[in-house]
Length: 326
Image (cartoon, rainbow, N blue to C red):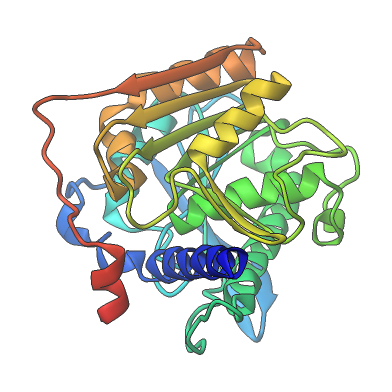
């Protein structure tokens, strides 16, 4: 009886976290965005990179006209719970401006929002979320192939494509690198020898249907993780039931440290889902340092930072229970 109760409790917790994540977009609104525009001297060009379900998927390329040829590229995925969001939301503009000013090409992509119209998730029915993540990863892979095919025209170094994403986008990019490293079927659309150069995730996690988090076929890309230790929306540590697991930044960092995979985790102590967007505005020097040292200079660092600002102010107080009631 105790064992059954424990499983029920684990299942309920998994249910609650998945529901909370799906609805997290209710908190990440433009009200929190710093209303910054893209700098006037930055070129923005829009392209269609794929057609899925009769929908044209587009991406925006940001660069200076004088950006050096063969530059590293940041491939960005927006947040919004796989229900809404946009690749050009103003909340990302300061981040894009900084990256382009430092001679990186930024490509912000659209992807299918697989949770739109989905039926309610239950402890025994998480397939809609799994499908939504798979759809986003498939579209990210399509955007990656498009970037590789057009690398010369874009002035992009095809060996230095760095993934970055916020919330749902952070889950997408972490999942994409995980699937590629494990040789999963979904990743076989990418060139066999291709590897992402790095990953920068703002409040992300990895969904596994195969038990423990393991990189079986190849080592993951150097990864930078930002996460609030009190995140009520995207799991910070992990939640697992039988072979299903949702693994957040804290658990990912533990796996990386044990296996000595290069990583940099920035834990915002006491903060919540604010870490899905605030580091893009106030941790830019750290992000640029990570790209230069870990990716360009290939330093094999294992860095773990816990930052506790005693004057911090929470801007997201909504709980999983409150989300579930909506």
